[in-house]
Structures are given as C-alpha cells and as structure tokens.
Length: 190
Image (tube, rainbow, N blue to C red):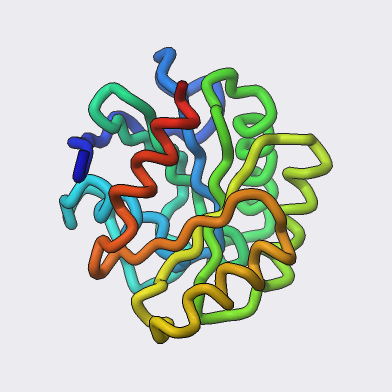
C-alpha cells in the first residue's frame, strides 16, 4: 500500500462540534510550522489537501481528515507560537484539553518534532502533560530530508532517549517514509 486517499471532513473548535464516527483517530501535536499539514499532504500524495503556510499559527481549529475510511487524522493548532490574545490562547487550551481527554475515538496522539532542532521546552511541556494523563503517544520526526543521511539514526536515537516509546522518521519532501508510516498507523488501528 503506497498511499491512502484522504479527504477533509470538517473543522471543529471544541469537542461538541467533532464529527460522529467510529474510526480510530490520531491527533497531531506539535509546534507551529513543524510540518503537520505537510505530513497529511505527503501521506495521501495530495499537496493541496491540508493548507500549509510559512506563517506560524495559521491552524486555529481541529481539522479532521478521513484516510480511506481506515482512520482519521485530527490536525490540531500548533503550540508555542500564535499571534492571538492570551484570552484566545486560554480558550484554545481549554477546548483542546477537553478534546484530548474525552474523545473516545483517539487511538494514539502523535507528537511532531523537527529533526533540524533540539527538542524545545514547549515540546517537553506537551509530553509531560500527555504522560501526566497517561495518554497513548508516539513521536514523528519531521523534516528528515534536511538531515544528512549519516545522521538520521543519531537524530532518532537522541529523541528516543528523551521521550522513549516509538519514534518514526518522516520526510514530506521525498515521501521516503510514507509507506512505513501508513503501516504503523494501520497496525495501531487493529
């Protein structure tokens, strides 16, 4: 299986607005501009499905994508950067916590880390919050195409040492890891 077809379903601000379906769901957590939208587009080989931007903080709602009726991906607003008021940020945080803690369809959270940089303080804070609630999570390392081939294993090992659990490499540009990533998601669904 080289790819899955995917389509955008709906955007929701809070849990009560989320679509009612029974497919396994994978929320994407990560800093703004870490590559969550590019990941969605690469996975289904459609550069126009999820909107990408060079400006951080563009995703402001939970965006749901159906991957061939096998699983759903929920693209969440990025953390760590947003040109919005503290009041708006507090509202997002409240809605996102409610969604992450109460959404029954969630199979596992996926935390995105940029391969080009060390793990950031807000990445550690997010991981700590997730572990505090004992939620299932794995790590996806984006932008591997910017890392020299000889350093791929050390980048993965360093993140695995910090976070533990499963750590998957990913490149949206060359789609090198798409098939293995899809297999991983499907295995979690079963």
